[in-house]
Amino acid sequence: MTEPKGNFIGAKAAFFHGTRLLTLQRDDLPGLPWAGQWDVPGGGREGDEGPEDCLLRELFEEFGLRLPPERLLARWALPSISNPARVAWFFAGRITEAEIAAIRFGDEGQGWALMEVEAYLAHPKSIREMHGRVGLARTALL
Image (cartoon, rainbow, N blue to C red; front, side, top):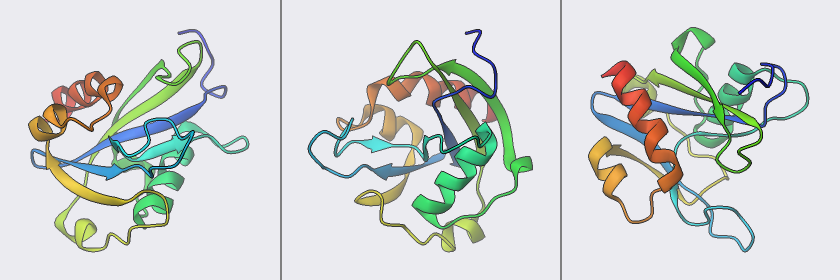
């Protein structure tokens, strides 16, 4: 992809605690892409925010967690799964027990879970297009 860092569609991340992955079940609303499926934190860009700011804002909105950019341990600019002609950023990081205990699920999504990576990849409601990215992040961190 040749799209510059400042021109991207959104950002998502695989956050691991050991071999478990932080996930959320998307809302089940008509017209919502991947409605009711299990996803990882992240979402669309707002205004002129950068990739890290986009991801960390979404993490706060979805889980109530505020992490510094230094906690993002790996990053990739990849074709967006919703619009392959555009760039989306994908990050990998780790979360601690204290951060898990501090999760305050927001008003986006139906719920959240820490899933074993293999359970996420095998789940019938996981987003298939996300599997390769989760695998890439797992290889980088685990």
